[in-house]
Each structure stands twice: as C-alpha cells, then as structure tokens.
Length: 137
Image (tube, rainbow, N blue to C red):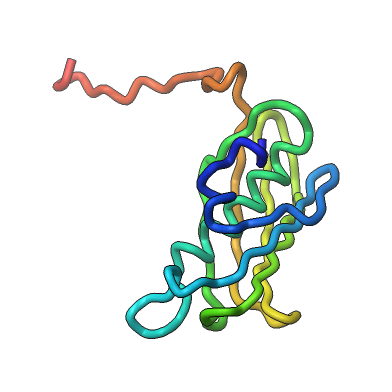
C-alpha cells in the first residue's frame, strides 16, 4: 500500500519499520512545510501520522481506510527536524479498529494522533449508507 502512496512519497516520508498492527515512518520538515509562524504546518504533521496509521491498519491484509481521526499538537516542529511517527494498534473488532500514533522529534513528543479504521471489500465499503433525506429524493 505504501509503495503506491504518491502523496506521502513525494513529501519524503519513509517507511522504516512495520509489523502486524504497527508501523514506523519518518519525515524531515522542509521549508515548503513551514507556515507563517515559522513552524511546521499542522496538516503535514497530521499527514505523517495518518500515513503511519494507514500502514498499521492495512498490515492485516484487508483494504482498510480511516473512519475518523483526531490529533493533539503538543510541541512545534521546525524546518530541518526529523520526525518519527510510531503507530500501534489498540483494538480491532469486526471490521473496525483503533490506532494510536505518536509523532516525535529526537524522542520528544510533537503530536499524538488517534485513528479509527474500517475494513472494506475490493476498495468499496461493504455497506453504503443512504445519506439522502426524504426531502432530497
């Protein structure tokens, strides 16, 4: 899955370790990733953590996607910082899972991410909810 992730690879994200329910990725913050405050834009930190989450939750075989995720920014990252994201499975139940990702710089926590996953079949959800209302039909 990671080999086909063009967005992550173009940002220089590297997969450095993986196993069942786990993944470790790294990325160096570039000048293009820095916002107007001179710190790494939160979207790039989220993308790194989300990519680690994706690698971990897809390690079991079935195509799995994010059902939701959130992140807490703990400390700023700056241009030149090497960030390491370590994803760990917390729980799997049915087609769902919960994964935590810590993003660190030289051992210091930069961000904590929690992702909720959902396995799908043939790249399509097994169940497609009807999101139309009576008024829109």
